[in-house]
Length: 267
Length: 362
Image (cartoon, rainbow over all chains, first blue to last red; front, side, top):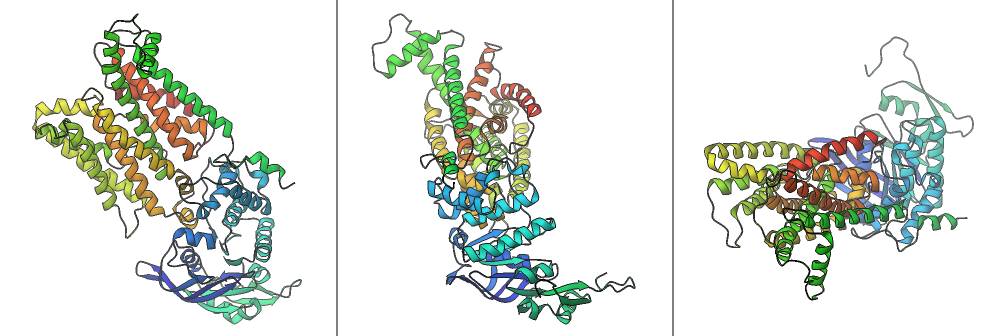
């Protein structure tokens, strides 16, 4: 059983500690949502696991492999990332970009084999991007870019998929589309999926478990029902919220309560 | 159903199966090689003593195949061909190839269409090295080379090394810092060059001539010296070209795809610097080749560096041979610096192409 195991991870930039003593496990086939206020350290945690930011202390393992000491290629075979800001070079085509997902499986000087093309093609089919294959990156819409990058991540054949705010800048249809896709990918490929999110209601519906972060620490993790209580959320976000029940799913439904006096706790 | 589109993607014997326009690429390569061959033949034939192209082909083939020399042509043709024009054209070809290939590499490395081979200090470093050699009147080196090319070569390499080292932030070398360090250290080297030049008015002319792209030595020697740098550099660049494609996403994504980004950057800078320095040591600071040739070829071949780097080498060679031909014939017997020709012809041509361009080629 593949799992992503983080234990006591701390990381930061310069003297600032952004992620503090995070311990978290994501099992194969499981979707875990990482939620919390802006600046809580969600994206930094993603960057630590993907090797962009180095950890000060702690361990990150996938199938027993130490991610923090693995080479970039070793790590990229296990962990794929769909970043928040998706920059793609204008003139490259979707086919070329998805094929870049094969990079960790190739010696640096080697060309892609027929097998690599096959894997990339399957990834495009799974994300319904095969019809975009010859399109240039600068001709894609936001939703299409997202799916192309998910296809590239699948072409890596990873064990762990990290999604950094996959629903940001998408309309409702695409938001639901990408979350549904993430759910079914976790099942099909026995992927361990960790995604950062801002929409608590969507996190409650689509994630098996949620982890709530504040100031670099995970203050609560478990099912949405257990974590998303009015007291917990009010204290972490500093706003008053009402928690009811989702009419279709029975998951927590969170709505802010207006103060009505113009005094916002942040401002 | 699943199999059918795969055929359209191409088969395992091609290196870039999911990449569109394979035949198109072959066409672009063929066109570049054809232009290069025509450029060579014309450049060999044209000069103060014109030699008919057919004579060029016959004499060269007979020598290559060790056949008896065609008696119809005067003996002087041999000397002109093999001792004067061919070495010059061969050196010109190598210089053009080195500048264009490293130019395309820098554009990819810095993800900046304005990048050229001189971006990280090669030009100012070579200028300083050459001027130092002249100012101190250094003798010819043990290898029998003039002190100027050796000084230029060393100056370029030392300057780039200083730029790269001073651009390091922690264990990384951000390209933006490299660019800024290149500007700062380049300005310093240029200022120092100017200072040295003004102190020795006699050396000024020699240094200035060299900077403008005048060729120093004659014969085949420079060719033999530049060739290994070009070959090794091109091989290294070509082997890393797919990684350079991945780097076009951005450094963070490249790292997440398993590229050792810092090692890749240093490898590319080193290879490109060695090639450029060797070229500059003999060719002087020929501008525009490294900037324009890769862009022009991008418009035809697409952004894949596995094609773009070798194409740039061929195209750069062809372009500089033609420019050199113009430089030595248009005001004959006076020779124009080849850099003047590359800028005078390259710039308008490039602007024309840009105006016809409807979208980014980068």
